[in-house]
Image 1 (cartoon, rainbow, N blue to C red):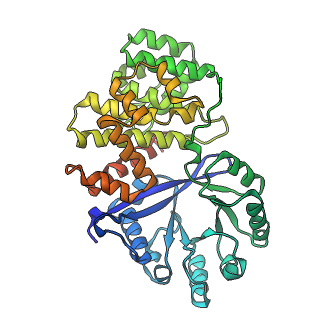
Image 2: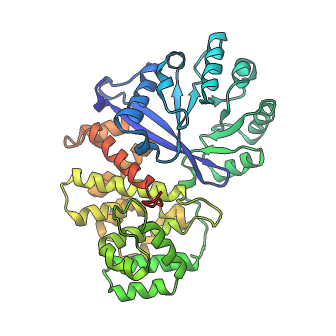
Length: 415
């Protein structure tokens, strides 16, 4: 199948402390123009080829592990033995028939050092009993289940020494329930869903960040910006942590606020101030960077890449595209409506229209970026059909570059 018909996505997997623990790699091919793959073997093989050959595992996964869906033919084949066993979790699709040859193969793979998972589990112990004796992780599909059903399925699974992963999690309430039941891993974008708290007041740090971002957007003098940082030394330290990551691309280690302001330049400073909003949201015991920071950084960088293709735009438009991507998640970060956030920031009109109405070129870029995150292949293909300057190859390349850039935030050149 031609590469331009394929779309690769990834979905975050978090631990109990809301830290990133890995990603599920997703493959989708659209139904548009008949470009749909029914064969699970081909779909899984395509993910493996794209992620581990063409795109590079380090670019796609960073320092995390990748979960990969496998059909029975692929499990039985020698191909998967070429995968780096320390970097992947092999997922047994729910469509796979559990029989004696399959169980023997799973035992072989486990003896080789592979980690095994059972996907989309809904409580059929008799059907999967032999597999449950072998796998390491069980992914319970909580979508559509009520709390009592989740409790019953979980209680029965305690017969096996497996790690429990709640997938298709839609709400914080589901997370809290599953944490109480002993689940260790959680999958979905629930952490990026805004929980609006009426009358919520910003913390001191959040207010300072909003003030800093406002100053940069109106191109305020550097001493005025520096003064706000001096009043908030914790923000200065977090900014230094961000700008010394390998994602900046510089080789000079920045050790002071004044050095950062001089060496970064106004454009880079604006970028890192935008990301600083998400950096300070991490609790003191959480790993850095937070999942929301990684998602926001990926979204902003993706939109920056799309702007260059979309309009052949200059630096200013690409910066506004990056800003649009970052601000599109700020409601989830702060817990207040986006309309209220924008009242306090002097954002350009095309950015405001993109965020509130998904209108204009920036709005189209934001909508496409969100579809890529969701791996909605049909909707992506429909957008590409009306935009001849874009194709799946370019979209995938922009997404992988954005993923790679976001993965490197928080990593120093020294490792």
